[in-house]
Image (cartoon, rainbow, N blue to C red; front, side):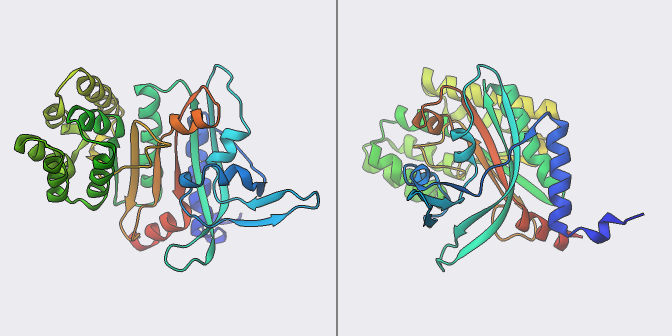
Length: 311
């Protein structure tokens, strides 16, 4: 009998484990071509993790690209059905590394949930993200935020578009004093500045986040956004994964494409996030789609490497 633990590489074992996990939840495998027309990526280049795309001319003169992303291809090659589409993928993507500009082949797996997206559906995807991390390493954490809460709160404070951009940068950098200064520069009160500082520093287990989130309820819009977020957190508590999830508003994505829930996963031994995900209804609208969507990608090489170091 073949001992597959000895035959398979850590990356291959990770892929097979995740494939089984996603099939258990009813996801079907999506297989894409290595090439798409470059125009698909050029129109949505801000959505891409990397600016660099490898291109070449096909025999018919079309400019093609060696795939830098899977999500865009899934959206392009699927249709609104009025029902639910649950797909997973395991693909190599080709991206330029930050700092060097050199292209690298990256093994990536992930899921996309397309259709009606409410609290139960978000909970399912986030639970799968947690289980994806747990499948290959014992020490991990998922950080979670809700961009609708952030946008409603900034709107309530009357922050300008430019001010919002500055605050987003402060959130990414965990710069609480910088965010408070932006609010003061925009004419906000010291109380408002103190609250935005609390938002930047916000970091606590999802299981106990509800009470602290109530601090940011200021009007009907913020109440609705916080309420929707809390309903997701309660679903995660019922699913038994909330203790592995931390609410942290530094998890912000491109507001042109993403809305609502955003998250990233870390595993001890990996220098950066090994999992990235979120809800991207705005991208669906840009691509003339009516359905909602949420998903995530796992960087298999990094997750497998973290798993080896945690053994």
